[in-house]
Each structure stands twice: as C-alpha cells, then as structure tokens.
Amino acid sequence: MRYIIFLLAFFLLSFSHGSQSLGELTKAEQLIKKGQTKEALIILNEAVRKDPSNGQALRLLGDIYLLQRNYRLATLFLQQAIEKTKSPDENMYFDLAEAFHFRHQFEDAIENYKLSDPKGKKRASILSKIQQCEIGKALLSNPLEVKISNLGEKINSIHSELHPLVSADYTQLFFTRISENSPEVFQSFNKSNWEKAIPLPSPVNTDAGAICAGISVDGEVVYTIQPTGNGDIYVSDFKDGTWSKPKAFPYNSPKTESSVCLSSDGKKLFFVSDRNGQKDIFSCIKSAKGWTKPVRLGKNVNSGQDEESPWLDADGKYLYFSSKGHKGMGGFDIFKVELKNLSAEPENIGFPINSASDDMYYMLLPDEKTAFYSSFRDGGFGSQDIYSIRMSIEKSPQLKLFKGTVSEASGLPLDATVLITETETNQVVAKLKSHPETGTFVTMLQAFKNYTILVEKEGFLFYSDFIKLADGESVDLSREIKMQKLLPGVTLVLNNIFFDFGKSSLKKESSQELQRILLIMRQNAGIKAEISSHLNDTGIDEFSQKLSEHRAQAVMDYLVATGIKSNRLIAKGYGSTKPLSSAKTEQNNIANRRTEFKILSVQ
Image 1: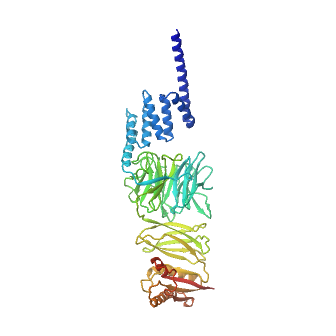
Image 2: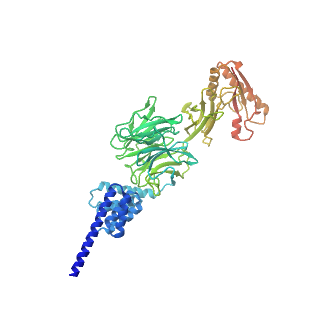
Image 3: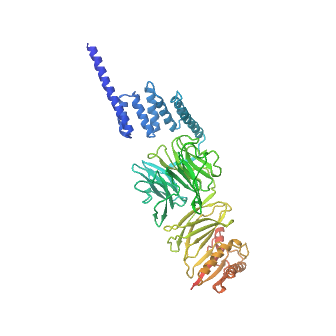
C-alpha cells in the first residue's frame, strides 16, 4: 500500500512539474511573438537549467539566437534540440541549416536543408538555398584581398545604419538610421576621422521620418525618401548655409520608391521602385527640359526578385547593385555589370564583401580603392552597420577628383562660376558654382586629357589655369584660387596664353584667354593695363629679354587688332628678371614662364 502511495505521489509531482514547465514554455513562446526576447530568454534558460534535455526549450533558445543573428549560439542550441527531441520536425532542420548557412558552414547547411524537406514539398525553395551554399563555397575558395572595417560608434549604433553616401572629396558622409521612432538622415564630417554623426535638420528630416537615398558628387544635393504616399523621392539643395525644402521627383509613383544614384557628371539618374510588383532599377537621362521618362533596366539586371541600391562608379563604366535574384550567397548580394552591356550576366563581386546575410548600398569612391556599404557582420554594434572597404589592388582610376576653393584676397569665400573645358575638343565638361559659405567646389575629370579652368565673379578679374592629364603623370588636382578685384595695381597671371618654344607667335589654344582679356577691356572702358611677358632663367639674358618683349607685344597687337585702343595698353618684356621663384625645379620654371595683365589705372 505504501508503495502504491509513493508511486501516486511521484506521478502527481511529475505531472505538476511537467505542467508548470509546459506553461512556462507557452509563456516564453508568447513573449517571443511580442518581441520580448530578453524576458523569454530568462524563462528558457531557467527551463534548460532545470532540465538539460528539454528539447522544446532548447529549440526556442536556438530560434531566438537565430532571430538575433547570433548564429554561433543558434547552431549550438538547435543541434542540442535535435539531439534531445525524439522525432525532430522538418522546421528544426531548416532552422539549423539557416544558422549554418549564415555562419558560412555550407556543407553542414546543405546536409540539413536536405533533411528539412524529405518529402520534397518545398523542393524549389530548398534547391535555391542549396545553390546559394554552393555559390558560397566557390566564393570562399577565392576570397578578395580587402580590409573591411566598422566605422565605429560615432557612426554606428544599436539601431540599423543604412545607405552610406560619401562625397567625392571624402569630407561628408550621409546615411539613414532606423530607430524605434522613425528613420532619420544623418551627416558626419571627415576631419582626420569621421566625427560623431548628427541628424540633418528640418525640412530634410520630418516628424514622420526621412530616408537618405542619394547625393550629388559634391554633397550639396541630397535625395531623400519622404513619407508621402508609400514613399516618394524628394531632392534638397544646400544653399546659404541651410537645406532647401525638399521638392518632389517628377516620376514618383503610387508605389514605393527608394535608392537614388546620380552619375558623376549629373546626366544619368538611377532609382529603385516597386511599381512593377517587385523592386526594380529604373534610369533617367538629363535633358534640356529636365529628366526623361524613367526606363526599366532589362531582365538581365532586374531579376524576378528584388533589386536595390544602384551605384554607378565615377567613370560610368560599371553599375553596382544589390539583388536577391541573381547568383548570390544568400539574402542581398552585391553585383556589378558594365553599363554599356546591360544584357550581360551580372558578376557577384565576391567574398568577404558579400556574405550569406544582406549586403547592400555599396558605393565606390573615385579612387576605386575605397568603398562603403551596409552589412550584418559579427562584432557589429547592433543590426546593420556601416563598413568601409579598402581594396589591396593598386589601379589607376580613369577619373580624377578635382577640387578647389575660391575666395577674395582677404580669404573671404566667394560663390564664383567655375568653367572647365577639355582642350582638344573645346567642349565644356563642367560648369560649377563654388559654395557660398565655404568657397569649395568639386568635380571629376577624365584621365589622360588636358583641361582649361576659368573662374569668374562679377567685379573681379577672372582666374584661369591649365590641368595637364594627357601624359598620365600625377599632378596637383587641387586649387586655392584667390580672386582679385578690378583695382589699380592688381596683376592677373594669364595661365592659358601659349607660345611655341623660343617663339613669339601666339598658339591657337590662347584664343579663349585673349577673348576674356578683350571682354574685360570692353566692359571696363576706363581700364589702362600693362601686358608683360616673363621667362625662366636660361642663362642667355639678351635672348630672354628680346623674346619676352616680342611675346608681350604679340598679345597687345591681338587686343589692338580686335578693337582696343593702343593708348590703353603698354607691352613690356622682363626676361628672367622677375621670377616667381628662384628654385631650379621644372615646376618653378613653368611658373616663371608667364604672361601677366596688370591694371595701371581705372577711370
């Protein structure tokens, strides 16, 4: 009798304990559904402590860590759950396969994907997952030589940071932060290192949120997704120290628009829209009347699944984008395709840039050695973080970054017009405005060509210069331009007056510069000026003196022949008596050989 009572008591105790355990697991499941994973973890860890063979608790722990992207712990607990469960179901094998997949343990992932679909009910989906693992194995066997670095706590947070966009001169970074409240556009400045990011002010960011979608080369135009409709593209300009009220892109649709990419010359625009049922990439061309009607890129770029974040490299050769539908390792992978051959199969840019997680918003700087993107990676600050990529392959980019500042002689910034012309074709390749607050400007120039620079501002003498890239040599591609007012005693160096070696006949490339001097003289009838010519020290003073006199006279003769009265001009040759620098270098020799325009009086 006592034995029967003992058995009954043991049975009731076990039943009570099992019911309590079952109730706790049900509570944990409900917490997980509500997103309260911290509370669920406490319950589940206690359940496993009391009963290490509790397969259901182990499984729920594995699923939580899988959700949190802690794939190491996810595989640990899911493997234990399968071992402790008498009849593991198909979903347990699938979850374990995904955990292995994200850890790049592709053979283990393939084995468990096969176990997750023994009856072939999800054959197409499982085959797709297995194909991703096979692609991953191939990419892992041939990794890229790159260094990937997290941008750190001044940029990244416990929230998701998306869509990094860096100005061509590497001074400004824009991105989106997704917090509990709403998405916001942030900005950081590079002063030896990236400074702590701050939100852009209203009207770019709104109470309802805003998403960073694209920027211009100089970072003074920003495209955002504003919460109108299902998400529309808007554009803001930075003028007079503030961001303008965003204006709607003319081709927004009732569906969702997202990422925007503007070519370095500002003539092509790419954006993403799901107006056709899934996210596709569209393109527009800049015309005299504005942007042309969007055209959907072909099916070789736009797959049957989502595409995102198009990015055209600086020289316009390759279009980069993220896709779920091309041959990737899983999630969004980054691909590239030649812009002139969009019918070709896009190329996966490789591991370790791409991973089994979502890798998106790739952008490559003009040096073609530094890139940025958003990714889920081990050791991050939270969800998606922003990373920089440093390429180890040395290559000479086809486009060069040209930047400068324009100011008065006192240093006060000027909003001047900067005109850059390619000398061989005489085609204007860039017409810029220097920033009114900082005087800065930035653009891209095609390598292996020569250019003339003209900077103009009303009330000031123009500035001219010459950039020689045709021979492929490394040259200084930055300028600190001091503009001079039309006052007596002011001297303008005419950098684009050219003569053949040892001769005084003007070359045809001098015509534009001469026309600018002619315009100054016509617009300011009271100006009297000296035209002077200077040479570097050749050791033959008499020859230098005579040649400089003849060259100065040649310039004066041109101006008189085109209508300027001779009594307004004086021609003088100074030989090598007034060098700008006495140091014997080739650069100084070039600077010393010059023609100058000096204002003698203004009536």
